[in-house]
Length: 122
Image (cartoon, rainbow, N blue to C red; front, side):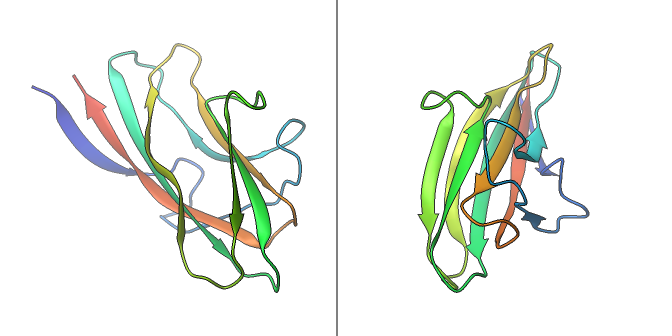
């Protein structure tokens, strides 16, 4: 029987939002979450973005990789519009080399990402 447990994003401190500092997804993206190394674990990832800037800002999420367009999800996050769902429960499978979720934004230090992971073990 599978077990489920709700976990913090691994780059979050005590559940706090993660500020996206990076402006380039390929060179030095901001780490959001590192997946598990056990191949019997699935992680359902939920991430919300908030924009505290005075203008709309593009945010790019590298989900499991940083190859454009294969592993990139891109959104424009409206200014001061509250929380906006950017990763709606997509699955990361455990891997000997853990997969990661990373982000960059069109403007540094104005996008904050919050969320959680539902960890599913067989």
